[in-house]
Length: 165
Image (tube, rainbow, N blue to C red; front, side):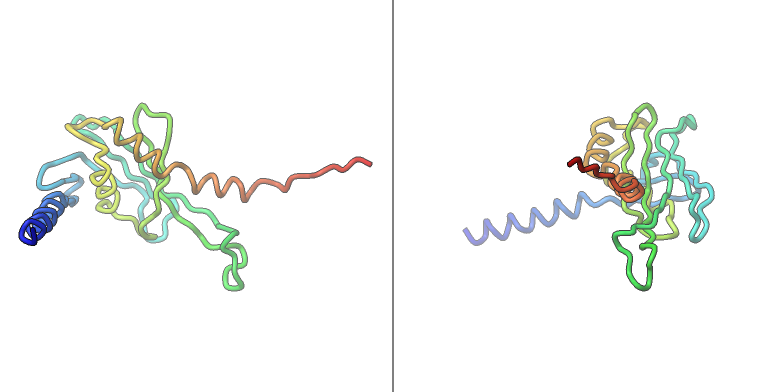
């Protein structure tokens, strides 16, 4: 029995090791485990830039995914050091032919192609040069639009209550 448990643990460790993806970007191409997945181009992505965008395309240069960096001042996190709130940055993933977006935590203030590529690969958003609708739906469901919804709530004027006697 003890040998069976040890064998199971070894096999479980090997299977999780085998499932790790090696994702990298080289000369505008996204590679996963050595195979080209898609092409990526960035625009306006300078240090502390508020207009950073990534365009993910297929071999025919058809746009599949647009990723835009956005930010807002989260007033719920206001403090004496930051009286107007803390700046929160996030990435908005938009997909060709899908009328919904996903807002993902921004990994850093200087977003790199590799960071976007890893999210795309981890969620399996592209297969054989096409979007995978189920994977896109899962990403949208998982992340939703929590940042823009929070910003909208914070920017709404307070409700006015009218009391009648």
